[in-house]
Structures are given as structure tokens and as C-alpha cells.
Length: 405
Image (cartoon, rainbow, N blue to C red):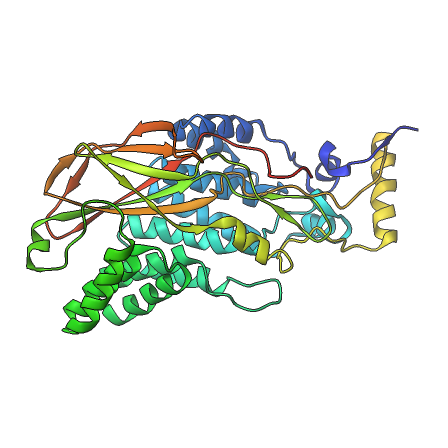
């Protein structure tokens, strides 16, 4: 009798135990549209996945749908999708899915997410709240991301710099200088070459009348700012506005499908970003990278590739599948599923501009600083004395992992 090695790839476990299919055409069509930057149509295509709540990949569907909705500027629905994806990873499973979860290894399990995916799900949800002007809700989500940052030895690391950065920006919006100062000091601690943590601390110190601290922090900023136009903190600074661009760069890590849940870095070519505005180029600075968090947390996972069921339970699932289909299956540990749209890095640049309307351009750089691609950005309005935030996706499509599985 014919034997098939990979139980989950056929989807038979879903048919028998969960009554749904793992390979949704709406999902793959949405990924194809996302891959060419057609975010609105990708969201429309993938929105049909909302009702497939018993699908073993349902949390992945919702997180990717949320991310593409965020890129499409549909913050309200992005908020709903992120909340749904997070709840799905943390939900109490129904009896059908619980059966699959207990006796099935690898991809035959309901996806529960790696620890770092929980971290970034809350972080991205926080970004959506921030864009909606719900700054306290944003702060709460950034704090949750920080609290969930757990390493392989079960210690909380607190080193997701982008969470601290946006927590600081949220505290500033809430006029909480002390909270903002704590957050930006953490940014400086974990990313000492990133200039804007020092800049924000200089502004906070200036506002509190701590002029010596302000001077020291501002000098630290100037030492790290390589762009020609420096942001000022004197009385004249209120006459200009600041364009803050956050760029999601590259492709997130892959799962190697091993019992120790090894993560593998993607070999994406993007290495940097410049923003062209008012005929000047400004280099963005890397604030954080996903792979180190995924690598450090590989031993502490919510969803694990390690076998949970007993040998008898695994044998039972093989017998049931053979009886239903006439095909003998060997279940195994293999699980390479992941949050497909997860970026690889986060870059930030702050640009001082006179009040007015601008049409910036994003320039993606390769490993040798050559230009990979350029993209015009929607028109933005700069207001004196204020920051204008834009959120961008900088990549050239999916790329293979840095080593074979």
C-alpha cells in the first residue's frame, strides 16, 4: 500500500478532524497581490478568510490580513484583524481542534505562533492604534510586546527597541515626559548608534529645564546623525515640522521545521533606505531586526514543533486516515509555517522640513548601497512644531532562507 510521508501537506487531518482545508486559494492570491505591492486588492482577496475560524492556519491568515490592511491604510479593519489573530493564537480550542492539537505533530496542529510572533503582533497592533490617534491603547500594546519578549531561558529580555521607541512616542502624545524618557533611554541602551533616542531625550530634558542634560543628549545625537540637515531643539525649532518615516524592510525569518524550532534568516537584498524629499536624500537608521529576537526565543515557544502526543495516539491517527482514504500516512515533526508577511528590519528617519505639502520618494538600497528600487509616497503635509508620521514597506519580494532546511 502506498505510503505518504508528510501527513499535514495533504490536508487530510483537517478534513477528518477540523472539517476545513489548509490550502486556501484566497490566501495565496492575496499573497501574490501583496508581493507586487497591490495592498488594497490583497486585502479584498484575503478578507474572505475571516470566516474560516477552524482552519489550522487561521491565526496566520488573520495576522497577514491585518498587516496588508495596515499597508493599505485601512487602520480600522487592521485593528480588528490583529485582535482576531492574537485571540486565535491564544484561544481555548474547540473539541475538534483540541483533538488535532493533542495527537498531531508539526503542521497538523492549530497554529499557536512563536513567542516573537506574539511580540510583534502586539507591536503592530500598537502601531495601528498609534495611527488612529488612540495613544493610550497604543502604549498598552507596546508594553504588552515588551512584556512578552521572553528568551529561550525563560528570562524577559525587554530588548525590542522598536517597542520602546513607539512607547516613547506614545508617551509624548500623552504628555507624559517621565514615561517617554524611560522608553527612549531603553532605545539608547539597546541601539546605542540610533540617533533619535538621544534627540528625544534632549527635547524632554530641555522642556523640563535640565539644560545640561539636554546639551549632553543633543551632542550625542549630533555625533550619530549623518544626514546633513540636523534637527534643532532651540526656539527656532517650532518654526519647522518633522517628517518621521518608519520603513519595514526585507523579509522575516523562516522555520527550519526541526524539533528544536530552529529559525533561519532570510537572504533579502535590502540593506538600507533613503527618503528623497525636497531634492535631498536622507538615510534612515536601522532601529531593530526580527531575526535576533526569533533566534533568542527559539527555545521558548507557544507553538512547538516537538511531538506532544504519544506513540499510540500518533498510530491511531494514521489508522483512521488509512481507513478513510485507503492511503497510509506517516506523521512527522515537520512544521515550516510562519507569519508570511513579517518584515525583517525596521528603519527610521526624522527629517526637518518647512511647513507645506511634499511628495517624498523611498529609495531602497542593496548591500553595496546600490539602488534596488524607488517608490513615490503619497503627498504629506508638514505642520510647524509637529511630527508627521508615515509608515512604509520597503522590500523587493520574498527571498529564500540563508541556509537550506
